Amino acid sequence: MNESVFIETTIPSYYVARRSRDIVQAARQELTIQWWEERRKNYRLFSSAIVVTEAAMGDPDTSAGRLKLLAEVPLLPITHQVLKVAKELLAAQIVPAKASDDAFHIACAGVHHMDFLLTWNCTHIANPHNWRQIAKCFARQDIPMPVICTPEEFLGNDYENTDP
Image 1 (tube, helix red, strand yellow):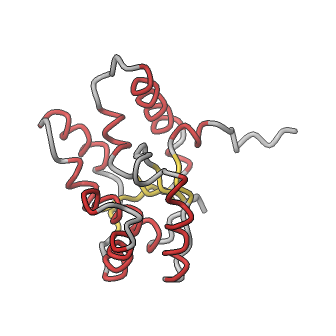
Image 2 (image 1 turned 120 degrees about the horizontal axis):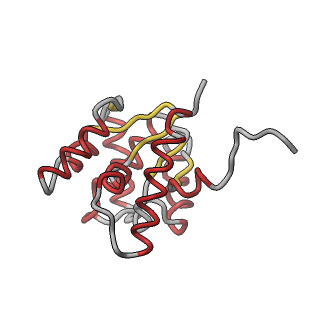
Image 3 (image 1 turned 30 degrees about the horizontal axis):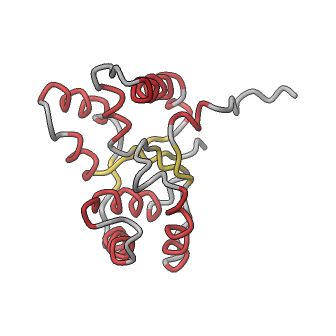
């Protein structure tokens, strides 16, 4: 069975955004489009209502594009355990209170045993300084740690190529 990927808000945001003139942002946009169009079919995608709520914010045309991208992605429930883990991530200041939605993304991916959490949020989510702390929090709850990564990391290796 295909591995599971939790789609965080930055993925549809980068996919539909007007092309940036900033070289780093433009590269991230292109990598996101490439992953979505070429690799997503290799995975079971999931997201959450919190991602949908975030995606609906902002410019109506852009938000419509984000919502269209997420329309066929099944939403994982925000369960009591997701709430508990998110609160622990916030209480331990692994994720700051001002970024509480990020704690819910991390918790939702872990509680629902996602193999990967795909994001461009390198401040609070795909931040290697936070990974050990997140893993310790998850271990206390007996939750497996998803691999937190960016589309660039998924594209860095053609795992389907089995030739030596």
